[in-house]
Each structure stands twice: as C-alpha cells, then as structure tokens.
Length: 138
Image (cartoon, rainbow, N blue to C red; front, side, top):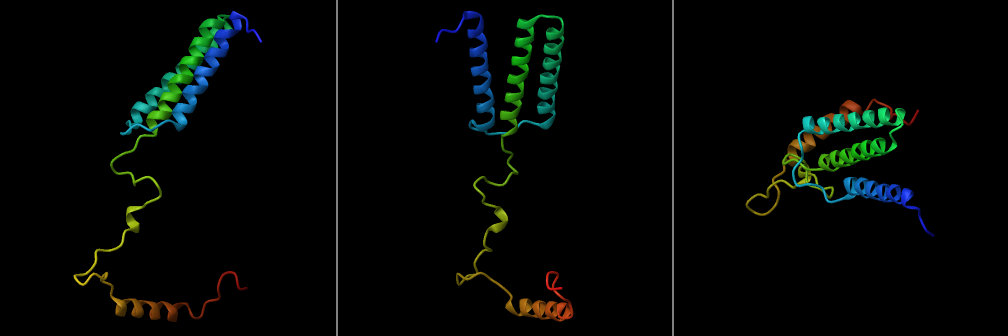
C-alpha cells in the first residue's frame, strides 16, 4: 500500500502524537513533581494553542491549524507527564502505607501493648452498643 506524500505527514504526525500521549500517561514518571501553578500554565498554553488552531481552521489555514493542534496536544502530554512526579511527602508506591508499620518492639522483642486498657474500652463499648439493633438486621 502506497501512501501519497500529502497524507504521509499526517500519518507520521498522528503516530508521533500517539506516542507522546502514551509516554505522558505510562512513561517513567519524573523524580520530582512540578508545582501546580506551572502545570496550570502549561494547560493554559495548550488551550491557547487549541484556540489558535480553531481560528486557523476557520480561516482555512489547515497546515497552521495542524501545527497548532499538534503543539497543544504535545504540551498537554508534557503536563500529564510532569504531573506524575512524586513529592517527598507522598506515600511510597506499591501500596505500602507508612501508617501500616508495626510499633517499635519493647526491649524483649515484643511490641508494647496495654491489654488491660483494651479490655476496659472494649467492655464499655459492648455495654453502650448492647441495646442497639444492627443496621442490616431489621
């Protein structure tokens, strides 16, 4: 199948934009995140480029419109990629939550836990809720 040269650049552009979108969504994330104000500026620039592309389309300048639209899509893909960076305050990836860590062990190797306080609180909870009917048991 032979593609005419007038259509080849459109095909190449579509492949390049598809690759940019895929890299922005699933490529390796940057090490640091970018401030939200910078991301907002990138998205505003992309919207501006879309507007320029729309005006170029309406005034019958298809090449300029294609360049403006492609630039807008590329800027959006860049903003997407930059937004995937992690902050130092973010929890680690892989589902590990720092709050799931075990308490530090006591000197004998066992975690320090006050079972007497636990039983007192459990008994007071059981007394308070003994007169209630469970929500699904009506």
